[in-house]
Image 1 (tube, one colour):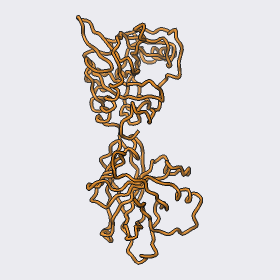
Image 2 (cartoon, helix red, strand yellow; image 1 turned 90 degrees about the vertical axis):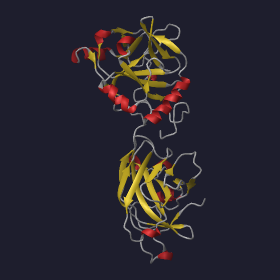
Image 3 (cartoon, helix red, strand yellow; image 1 turned 45 degrees about the horizontal axis):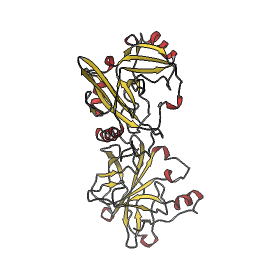
Image 4 (tube, helix red, strand yellow; image 1 turned 120 degrees about the horizontal axis):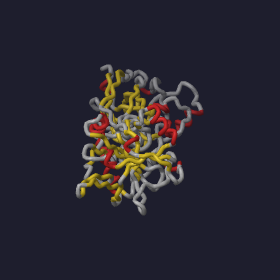
Length: 399
């Protein structure tokens, strides 16, 4: 398919930077369906890579010597962004009615906000031009090729008229609008959950949850928080679109055991002091269990984040709206069931579980002791970035 040609003339000699842009091949999207939905999914057959030889700066007017007397196309204004998800949004705008009937296409300039003032001129820094036939507004823009969750973008629009020779006459650019895409929805998290279930492996018994920290941490808890560990906001480790990152408050615990001993490992990346608490103190029929995330950090092993929240607590209400809930007696990761009047607990063998408990925990409910193993900092997941290329733990939406 021949690339659209933007009909205009340069008022000054081409600069070195403009030459760089001129020679880049940008990803552009032809209209995909009758509803005006622009899609960026590789499964669609309407995608094509277009060469935009002359990239217009925002605010420049197109000109064409062959049709100099033609009325200018209306410039979009009052841009509105709505129905924002992690990989889609709807866009609409107002236009003057003058010359409106000449519009055949819309050009949408979508760019990550962090790159809008960039002078690097690398391929990823050049705005993505989306080309759509002129259809009734609002129009949906969808596609994980160019949209990522929880990411700030800028967007501007041109109207265009395709000529007989294939050139495009275009309007001036609209104003630049900023917006931010949303987190993963429950639907997306359920897709992650299903991928995690595939590799969870068989279940092993456990009896305690544990939390590793430095001695100074526990001293601080005793002196300043009345002996109770307090929930804190989760960091940005894991999937970029996770709705719990930077929002959910909780306390991290581990529960994995060594295969040969059935006890917690002696090594830790988080400090040489360990708080252990009986599993039934945190996880029981009075708590709800939620799936939070599934990720890896460019390694062979994978992490699953689970959330334990006392029924009716603020943490429970937060999770109920955003996360898939698991049956505490029957799931692939962490179970709690009664056998002969005793609570029995199991955890998945082949994933590393990170458990977030959403309420304060008093140190008096367990014990603090120094571990005998090593402090393996390489295993830390603090603000760890997920491997976007891993086929095991990624789903078909923006990374």
